[in-house]
Image (cartoon, rainbow, N blue to C red):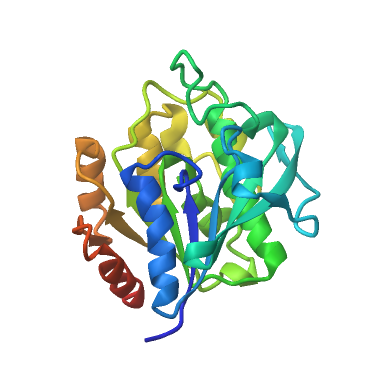
Length: 266
């Protein structure tokens, strides 16, 4: 079996966040794939509710220090890391005071969806990819989990399309039952316009609903995995209409081997 390098980018990972189907897959899949001989890197946001002391996070000074410009404003990129000893794996955390120090994940204590979740998605996706470039680590597969990672396929195919580290990278997008209400910020599309990304590329985000954000991710991905039951029916229909390689929902007992084999087919 070819020793492919797998980059995991996840909206949530247990034990740093409560257990969900997504957070469990994002925790145990990298470990299982690593135990089967692959090389891995794993990233998630450093939400303010992640306890740094208990989880022994520490800043990686050599990777931190960049600024990412979003909507004409500079935002410092801080990289932290923690180890899951039982799994012999590290998790990298994308951190920024403006976006990730609040003590909640995607909703405030009154269950209101954060107004700046669009910019948080931008910062997270670009933060991961810029960090991977700094690591000089070329992934063969980039596996995205959760709608917060939905911009990664777009960035790989358009903004970083001439970056040598990503020349051979294939993007896998896992679809979950993680629908958000309403829409993201109306200016989301405008904030994405940059070198390599035209208005036509992100035209679907004129109405930045969950369905349209998911459709953008599916459009620029190379392959798709159904991660959970109960996904949005419209997104499932779009997924099937892409004509791309799809791995259907897998049993909990055997999904790691199924995913690992799926990687080998790419």
